Length: 122
Length: 108
Image (cartoon, rainbow over all chains, first blue to last red; front, side, top):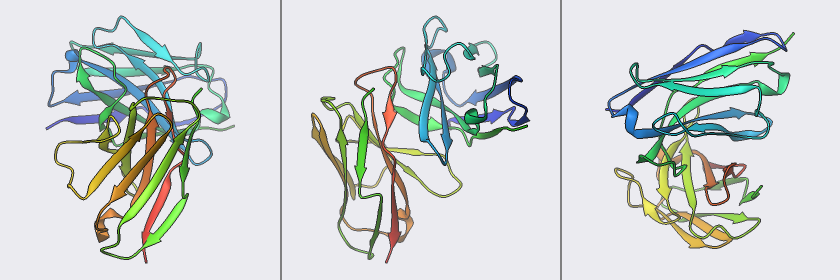
């Protein structure tokens, strides 16, 4: 069965960096676009970034552009989110999510991980 | 960005009731609309995609409809396990895709 397991969350000071990972199993990871979506009490659910199945195309929400970087290693079935210059308003639970349609990005999230909490605080 | 407005923000209904949630887009999005269910402490779960297509394994009491700017999500006969927050999400004008603010559903 499909499993997505995030890790790497924690407490970090403003301006510092953090890298999240999402280990995928139970499906052909290299055939699906992958996303990061975050959730906070203030902003609700907020899409963060997408990476195509082959890692070539990447798109970001304006709120994270230039600070957060999505990447993937298809040989390790793992998705990453490098988070630099973190701000207090980046505090959220971060989910990785799989796109429903193979070899495309339709932004239909059919499987989600359990989430990892990132807290940005001084 | 396309703004998604859900109503009501919270809802209380009895077991067996028919429950309807609406989602309005700030501009036309054809049928590029998904519905998710999120139970406390869990990740969201896809229920409906493309406005009206039931995801595999989802009970048939859940349904969706609409196109353009106005959409509905219906539970035909509310069950205790349906207590959750429900979100709509558009994927027409992207990026970014956007979510509604959620509707919290409780049992009366």
